[in-house]
Image 1 (cartoon, rainbow, N blue to C red):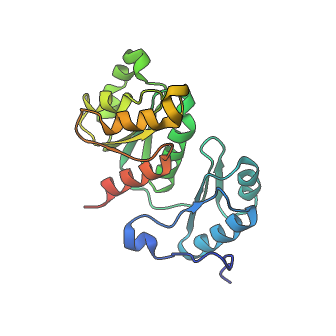
Image 2: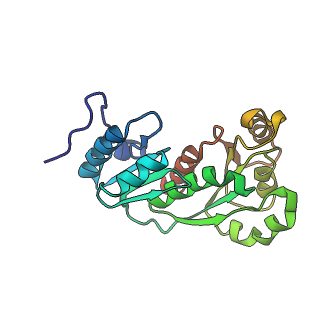
Length: 218
């Protein structure tokens, strides 16, 4: 029997066919029971369910009871089941280890969507040699998700070095004048290197969806 979602949730089972991105559960603000019921219903319908921003205690508990469940603590992403592998390689780069939670949200989402993910972490502009050291690997990806806080310079630097389109993600990492990521957001929006799109602050999931659409829609 198909699990019944909570009364207050109206699930969009056809979203994947309609938009090329399946409905994904935003876990923040939901109870463990709500996430459990919604994920079970999505999995029963499509053999796949994904939830983001799932608190650690809830994620660990749900991993033990949901079908084919995998919980990633740092990313706060809970995946059930799998989607066909695409063979597409998408890179996720971040400036520093403080940006890892957002970068991991993007990486784990892309992996759940079936892509091969290249992870390039701690390659920020404070040590530009680190960026240059992975230039060829970045250039071999179909799309790059580039995550940075502080002054948000990394997407512009990488965009001036490689061919793939870039989805830039500002993070809320930084000191007082970073204004919770607003400084990085404005820097990325005002970058001079072409071929960069920008998503909202800390929105690793949104960046993953853009990258997914770029490589799968023809």
